[in-house]
Image (cartoon, rainbow, N blue to C red):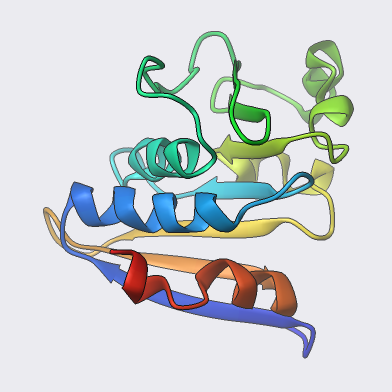
Length: 161
């Protein structure tokens, strides 16, 4: 990581805490934010994304589920929210069929599960959310990306819990 980047690690001991971290970050997210989510199956990517969506003002009437088979779900909120799951993609070129560039062009907030599969297609200002499995209920949430953006997103995070 260069001097323009930041890395913050947060410990989560439950799905509720992981959701709360996503909620707090979602409250600070803005048009143009792209969140690249990485972590093994069951690490909490979709749980975090649910919190992110609620923080963006996506209503409770919308169930936030991973779009594993549809690849993309779109939700209304304070900002339009685009939730990708690229697990089933075979190559980055398949993103063109989705109109991917339009979704990450700044007219909404995007969260991309399994983002490591399309790392070469992510904008340089992407914020990485890496979910690390520690124990059955414990995770380390690693947030990295452009220094100023990461600081803004995690500022006073503990007060949001």
